[in-house]
Image (cartoon, helix red, strand yellow):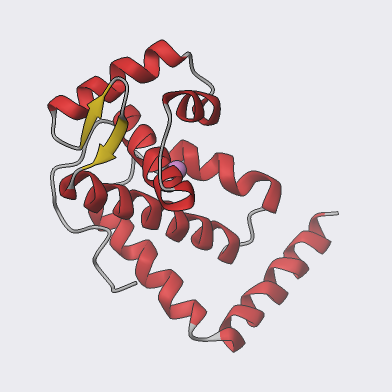
Length: 153
Ligand code: CO
């Protein structure tokens, strides 16, 4: 991942649209298709909400939806979907690096991913890249954290 690619300023869809696009992009890359029922199951929503959102994403040219043929991401939808998935992965790496418990990583990313400015995303990306390149420094930080935790007990 190149520095700055996540924070690059392109018009992004609304938070809930982002959740759908992220999930659709993942389903498409895992299975080659994304069914309304699969999307509904993954996002924990009613299929009728999925249909509504998919129609909205179609109107905004992120995908093409035909009731009986399913949906296909457009070029724009693929580009944005990929960035959303990369952003999610970077945020997971960031939380792991700073020592967040594995059990909290996914939910916490889902909670913050739509609310960070592009500058903040760039800073976090650089932080991840810097520390992933310097395991010695990372270990120093880990030791520091363990001491802190031990002294709190
Ligand atoms: Co996400």
